[in-house]
Length: 290
Image (cartoon, rainbow, N blue to C red; front, side, top):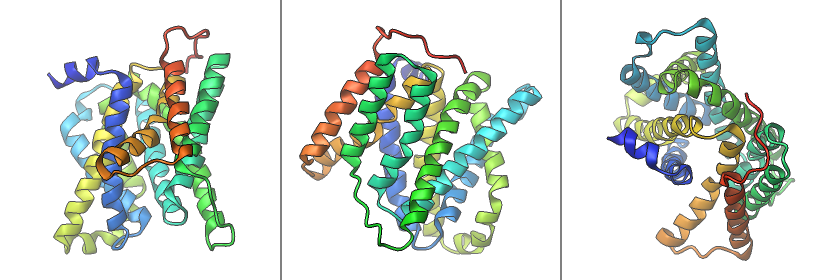
């Protein structure tokens, strides 16, 4: 029943729902930063999610070639690494700046894999829309700004890798590959979180908070990504990521009565046009296969 509903749900709506769950997870994660480092918080996300996915999907029952297994493991390392450096950037500079800079990764994927004029226009509209919504003001005199910028650009590069490799693993194993990747990432990045195990197991509320972060920031959104990636090409998937900051602004208006600025409204319009261009069946060029 659930799989049938998801298969009939338009991809933009799945993106918006995925984004909303990530915002919930991010809000919980910010509170966790008071007890754990950003890297340790990210590791616990994938350690808990990896165990759940591994037991749920039982990937050991699926026949994998060495190439498919390697792709799934490498995908998990990129996925977790992307989140670790994102948290490190978030600990140093504002969320809006981080989102704007890391979105360069999906834009690069969209342009490089679909060189049509429509794709280029959609990519640049999406980029300008994200920057307009997220804001792009930095106090370069503040400490650690340079390191925060580095982590933001690195997150963007890893995001691009996540999209390209994610398209492959979605066709090769889907959620089974996601389970292998998350479990492999938990093992590979264990040095970031092993020292925090006594702290977490002695604090029930902290453990529950980490469980919520794993559920809302990893299990739900990345499972949905695997479903979406099987339906869309990589360039279109890249551009639809622009819906994430746009949906956060809309929720801010509805739930928190936060009136957007003029630049925010302009950004929402630009992203809406970009999504229409990206999802239109009138696309003038076929994307490259990856």
